[in-house]
Length: 367
Ligand SMILES: CC(C)(COP(=O)(O)OP(=O)(O)OC[C@H]1O[C@@H](n2cnc3c(N)ncnc32)[C@H](O)[C@@H]1OP(=O)(O)O)[C@@H](O)C(=O)NCCC(=O)NCCS
Picture (cartoon, rainbow, N blue to C red):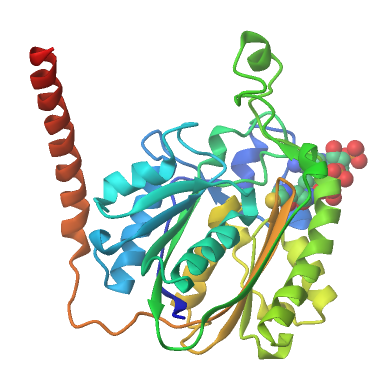
C-alpha cells in the first residue's frame, strides 16, 4: 500500500489589509477589545477581482511548483470552501480550468473551518487505496462577501485567503499517519449562513432580514471549540501510535488566540509549540491551516521528518485532527516552469470554449 505524502504547499492572500482601527470606523469596536478577545490585529479582504478560484489557483500553482508537478499530472482536485463562487459548478472545477489540470477529477467539499482536514484525509485515502497518485487539496475563502459589516460580533473575526497542499503517493513510509473526523449537526444553528440555499432561496424578505450574512453564537462556539480541540488532537495521536511529545508543532485552525491558548493548556503543551498567525489574517476558515503551514515551513519550524498535528473545528458543527510526518518534495529529475502553466491554463480554456462554440454551430446547422 503506498503512503500519502504532503509534497507541495502554497498560499495566496489578497493585498488589501483591514486593521482593527479601520474596523473601528465602521462599527462600535476598538483595537484593544479585538486584540484582547481574539488576538487579531488585521485581516486581508478580497478585491473586486479576487475570488475563491483565483486565490485558490495562485496557491495551487505555488504548491505544484514546490512539488515540481505539472497541473496535467494531477488525478484529483478537492476544493474545501464555505464560500463557493456558485452553488454549482464547483469552485474545484473553476480551479481545474484555470490550472489546465486536464486529467483531474474535481469536486468541492464543505465542512466549514474543518474542511481542509477532511479534504487532506479524503485525498490521502484515495492515494493509499492505489486509485490515484497525485492530488491537490485547496482551502479557499472570501468570507468578507458574507460578513455583515454592521455586526461587530462577527465582522471583526473573518478574513480572506487560500492555501493548498499537493499530496503524492510514495513507497517511503510516513506522510499522513492518522486522521479523525467528527460532526454534530444538532449545533448547526450556532454558526450558519441561513439563506441562499434551497431551503431559503434568495427573496426580497431574506435580503431585508439579513439572512444572507453569517450568523454566529460566539460564546457557544467558543465553548465547543475549546473542548474538541484537545479531544481530537489526543484521539488522532492515539490512532497514529504517537504521544504529544513526538510533535514538532501543532497547526490549529486560526479562529481566536484564546481558543488556541485554551487548547495548549488543555494539552499541557507550551504555547510556542503551536503555529499562530491569527493576528495577521483573522479567521480565514478552511484556508487558515494551510496558510499557517506555509508560514511555518518558510520559518523553518516544520522540516522533513517532523511530526505535526493539524486540528480544526467549525460550522456543522464539525471538528477533526490529522497527524502527519512531514516529507517535502519527492526527488524529481525535471524542473517545472509554473509561470508557463498559468498562461497555458488560460489559453487551453479559451480554445476549449471556441471548440465548443464551433461544434455547436456545426451540430446546430445539421439540426
Ligand atoms: C466572538 C467572541 C470574540 C466574543 O467574545 P466574548 O468574550 O465571548 O464576548 P461576548 O460575546 O460575551 O461580549 C462581551 C461584550 O462585548 C461586546 N462586544 C461584542 N463584540 C464587540 C466588539 N467587536 N467590540 C466591542 N465590544 C464588543 C458585547 O456586546 C458584550 O457587551 P455587553 O456585555 O454589554 O452585552 C468570542 O465569543 C469568540 O471568539 N467566539 C468563538 C468565535 C469563533 O471562533 N467562530 C468561528 C469558529 S470557526
